[in-house]
Image 1 (cartoon, rainbow, N blue to C red):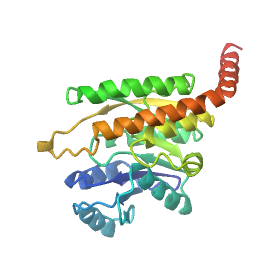
Image 2 (cartoon, one colour):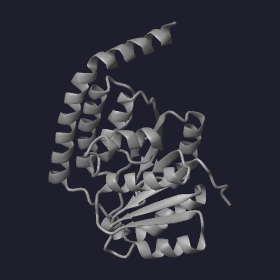
Image 3 (cartoon, rainbow, N blue to C red):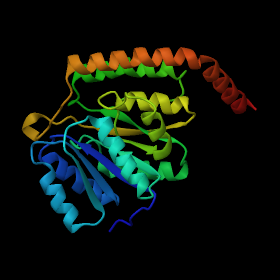
Length: 258
């Protein structure tokens, strides 16, 4: 049985992912405790089996939002509750089974060794990955590299990460953005602006077909518009922070060469 952590928890936001939610929680629980789920206004009944699991396992906690608010909003809701319970770090992962639960201990170990760092999964795609998604993230990653002066974000969109809760709450609560699909890339950039150092861990990602129970709420037009407007906003912020970012980069290079 996994020894419960009093500092690091797994936080899984979920919206209408059907049976995949229960299997994801079950797998995550094999490798870590506690595991918290934020059900973001789901209407498919997917919260029922995990509520039953939580009734039998005190290391599983389910928070249910009455209406869908978006991934970032669900994560923020979980962060507030987690910090109130004494936790300092949260590993976020998707509820649809795309992220490998077997790597949870590796991600957590990196965070425990470097508690002020931002631990990021860097996706390793297989043949199931849609071409449009892979190509689109290259554009987002290129923008994130520029916006941070190549601070080391291996992938701006991969959702399996370990965050220090306090700085993550600070950047989210200072802005009305980062509540939906823009959550993952924008918080990565803004946390780098705050000085958090990224640690990248290669991580396989699998896209399930509908026949395999795969569920996707990604809308190409709507969400690409959201991401494009987000990067326009970040580029404006980057220009304001450029002197600070240049100074930080030169200081880091000087330290490496010393």
